[in-house]
Image 1 (cartoon, one colour):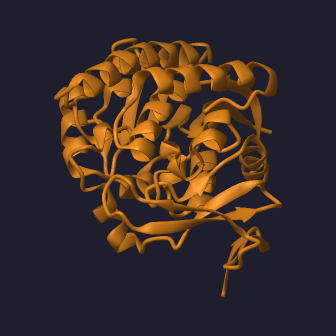
Image 2: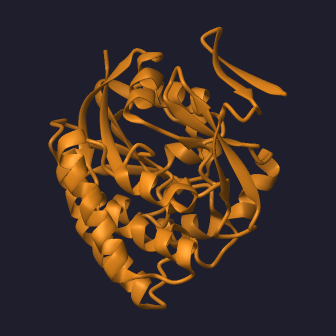
Image 3: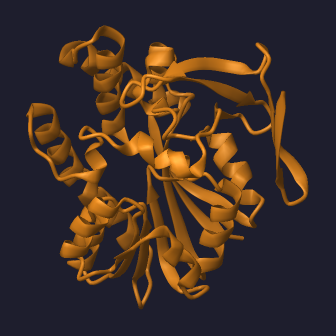
Length: 299
């Protein structure tokens, strides 16, 4: 069996369910317990989750109290630590977008969750808009942003070439219509705007160490699994280019902590810290951090 998708009239994904193309078989550890295959695309150096859940069923895989980006929960030590790290990351994200000089400072955050990044940007004189498909998360986000967050259908109503910065913090891997959405983001950017994409990196040491237990595979919510090459090739197809990459240091520790839970049944802070530390040290030479932020501009 094979599955073909097209990109500018060229075959982009050719999925052949043979042993040669299956990179890993990975279990959904969060919700369903189902098993999915990761299919390797050699041309793009990219993985695709197979099979894709149908779009009307995809939302079911997010129905979990443990899906932390859709809540502001601080029920236990892990969630409290998550929010401390999140607060530090928000300041770094704000510093990054503030480095792009623009008069209007118009920001679109796609997949904004409960709106914390939009809130800190709003507090620092950015004009903000957000897209969030989850109704509960959107409700929380709107309470923080003066009702500036909308469902994903609102993307088609936004004015072309109107945003200085568009951000997707660990969102691109969730989007079923990958090609279509990259085109939309390119069309919404001003000529000198920046598209900021943060995604996990399956070429990192922690991914190789944990293999099918690596938490950042997060199937089937993560439909795509990127390398640096795949991001560059995907945006080049839309007349954009990566101008900078920024490591997300904390992700190596956070992902390792969850991966330990999936692998051994409990979080092992010491072991996960050591794996995360080793991953970051190796990445200083290779550039292959657990997650990377890509700064992208129009050519």
